[in-house]
Length: 172
Image 1 (cartoon, rainbow, N blue to C red):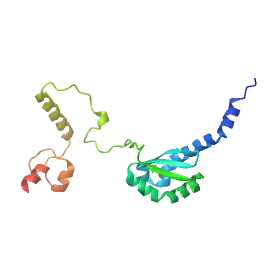
Image 2: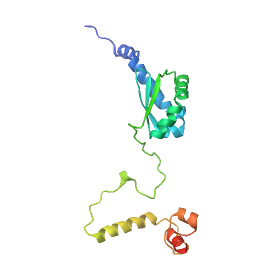
Image 3: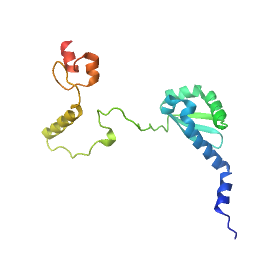
Image 4: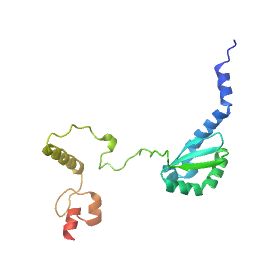
């Protein structure tokens, strides 16, 4: 039995239609945001390129599915022109949508669900209240003070009303 060198086997394998289809799909994934734009790319992700030339795309909701359905023909033409991938159709569905995890979360005022510390259950209601009170104090220690009551106040409340929300309601 003769052995075929690995380089020859790989070269033959790369000539198969399955391999070319996977390479096309990888190029499509890499270029997706340039093809559809940043806003649409946030709400859609290609899932599969079938051997029949159908591109399956997951979208955030039915509104995005409908929006992209109306722009399906220009998108198919753009994919053909840019990547040389001849598509027969594009199917949009929210069934397999998984929201992307935010890379740069800008709102640091609240802890993210995945980063919550694991605490033992409070033994008493007073202990639970004390924990909550400490957490609120830590979260608001860098807030500016309300000019009327001197309580820590989120900057957005001060920008909007000039005082904290409680003082604003009292004055109304």
